[in-house]
Length: 315
Length: 66
Length: 53
Image (tube, rainbow over all chains, first blue to last red; front, side, top):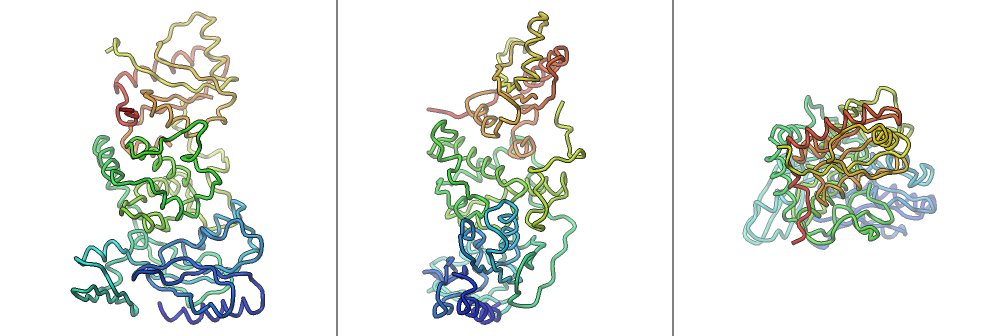
C-alpha cells in the first residue's frame, strides 16, 4: 500500500499550491509504532508528513464537518461512505470537499498483533501483504490477511463510493453469502446468555467516550450522555449506565453506521463496540434493503416513510 | 400470579390512545391496573431515551401507543 | 429498537407499540389486557433496572 502515498502527496501538494483547498486532511505517523493520527496539512512543504499504511484505521470523515472553506480529504472506502452520510445529513456540502479516494486493502488490528508479543512493539513495517513487527525480544513476519480488523474482513466497499480522484487502481471487492455471521452467533443465544454476553462485553468500559469521539456519526453538539436536565444516563461505571450509553449510542447510529470500525480502533480497553451496531446494520439491510453511505441522493430509512415499511410490531 | 405487582409505563398520545383511555374510563370498562399513563402531545414526541429511562427506573415494560 | 433490545437479551414482550384511535375504547381495553398478561408472564424487569446502591 506504500506505493500510493507518493501519489497522495503529489495530489495534495498540487491542490494546496493552486489554492484550491485550504487544507488536506490525512494521516501522519503517530508517536508510537503501529499508530497513525489524523493531521490537517496546510502548506505544500508539509505534505511529506502524510502517510498511508495499514494502521490508518480511524475515520477521517470525522474531521470534515463544520468546515467553512473547501478542503481535501483522503478517504478509504468506509471514509467515503461516511462523507456521503455527512452530505446527506447536511454536515458539509459536496462542493466544499475534494475527495482523494484510496482503494483500501484492509487495516490491521493492533490488538491481535499486540497479543503475539509479550513486550512492547517497537517497530512496524509492511511490504504488500506481509507485515514485519518487532519488539525488543523478537521479530515476527506476519501475513496481513490474518490480522485484519474484524470489520475489514467483512468489508464489501473497499473502493471509495464517492471521490474526485483515485490515488491508485480500484481493488477487487469481496463478496459474501452471509455478511453477519457474528450477529447470527449472538442471535442464536438465549435471552440470558445474550444479556451475559453484553454484560461481559461492557464490563471493562471506562466511559472515556473514545468510541463516540472517533465515530464520524457522533457530531451532536451535546451528546445525550452530557445532558443534565434531565440527566438520562449517570456518569459513573454503573453497569446500567454503561449499557444505556452503548445501547443508545448504537441506536443513534441505526441506518447510518458504515461499519468503519473506528470505535473499536479507538477503544483503549479493546471492547468490540461493533457488537451493538452490527445488529442494526443487519436489520437495516434486511428490513429496508439499506446500506449507509452509498448514494448522496437517498435519504436514510429512519428518515423517510414508505407504505411498505415493516409495521408488524404495531398492534 | 395475579397477585404480583407489575408496572407498565405507557406513553399515550394525547389525541389517540389517551382519548381512548378516557373513553374507556367514562364507559366504566374494566382493565388491569398495571399501566402507569404518561400523556404525551404526540407519539412523535417520544424519544428512545424515554423508553430506556423508564426501564432504567424500574418499569417492567413500556407501552407506546399512538 | 425492539430488535436491538432483544439482541441485548431484553425480552421482546417488554416493549409494545400500538395504534388506537380515540374512539376505540374497547381496543384500548383489549390491548391493556394483552400487554398486562404478557408482562405478568415475564415477571419483573431486573436486567435494565439501575441499582442505586
